[in-house]
Image 1: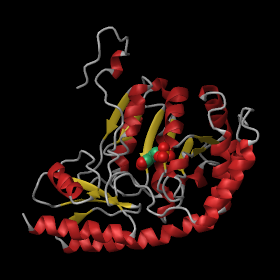
Image 2 (image 1 turned 90 degrees about the vertical axis):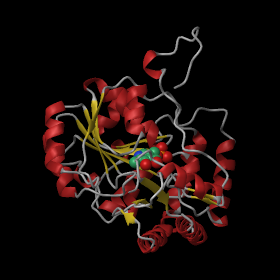
Image 3 (image 1 turned 30 degrees about the vertical axis):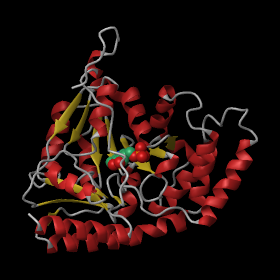
Image 4 (image 1 turned 90 degrees about the horizontal axis):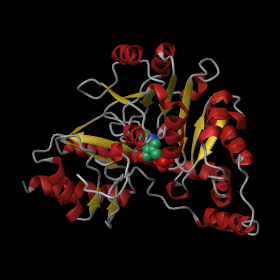
Length: 362
Ligand SMILES: Cc1ncc(COP(=O)(O)O)c(C=O)c1O
């Protein structure tokens, strides 16, 4: 636990916390934060460079506060994927979906939030930072979501924000669109569906339900399937009333002109960028097969990562042995489990080979 100097008037609820910290360590294979392993092609980097140069001329001015052009392109993108008829008024854009999550707590957190753990660890952490009460809902022993139990928990706690992550991080499992609909029907506040990994999954997106259930709000990001984590662009798809409310808590000009411009370029090159999704999905199935061949158990996953178990040493020790051999994966703090992000072919092979050697040497 951190010890803060006594003179520092740090808010009491923050004193036991440590800053979010997936280790950023040098390694030959970086498979720990669910990024895309594919760097941008020279055509895209050139287009980004040209757009940044054009925007740079006007950096003496504040950016478009409402990011209207970008929000409109994001709406078009979602419409093209999900056959919806959303407009810029249904989109809020921010510096990564973490900022979206923070804004949701700031605007709607008064009656508390509920999520089903294990899930994305930042949901409860950002709740804490924003002084929002958080309830840990339960999952089955195999980490799948028991919808009847989930409905009961939502009814019992009546939170203003109920979180469902699908595909779920760190487990990779999904809930169906019919199950999302069931959850929305019992949610008196907002049902927040975190779809950070949606592009890797063949489930129907919850954005298709927003018209019927305006209390469904859907988080998306360009950090994963779009190969654009470094640009920091996340967004919310929701009813206009929700988006209007988020304008109350956003900081003025929070989304820089450069971020807006480069995200627009990424959307223009969406087919090329998302072209890597199919490769990652087939690599995921290769990694799964290899892990199972090592007698490990792998959870079903529709994301770009796998959670596995069945090794005979503590997870932190296996994690460290892999790191020492140049392979950085993720210890998500679940006893007996480790999570690996799907990387390039070379990274995946290195991971499997290294793991095989470690397990055989035990
Ligand atoms: C489920 C989920 N939601 C949101 C995020 C945040 O992504 P970003 O802030 O990069 O958009 C992540 C990142 O790992 C995630 O796993």
